[in-house]
View (cartoon, rainbow, N blue to C red):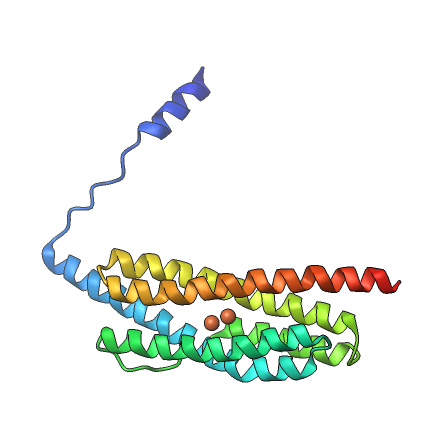
Length: 191
Ligand code: FE
Ligand code: FE
């Protein structure tokens, strides 16, 4: 019975009052704006870093299909960079890159996969797909949240631009999954 009471109390609990002095609110808003811009700088660095890594991944790929996918996404990544520059402009901010440790780590992982596998093997491709999908999922997580933030802040045009990139990252992830399925099938057939 005690547990029922606790559960009921939980569901009916109301959030604490958030009424604040208008000055505090303004300061918080500008702090959030700065936080948002900092996160944009982070993904801007990530996209730039990725645009340099993707051609190397293309070169390392075994199957022409995977190589083409990396080539396509190199061009798309350049569009993501241009889109972010548009976003900075809309916000009246300077387009500036701030080192993204996560993307640096993900790219380092892709590089070590290239080092650890032999050229011309399907294992190489399997490793590259894994590394690339980790990158795409990181981007999907980032843009997904940034779209919500932009929308909540009333920057609808910014939200729409970021959503466009988000949709492309999701499509890339799906395309990589399709190549992964084929790669595994080919590997199984070769055994
Ligand atoms: Fe991207
Ligand atoms: Fe991407």
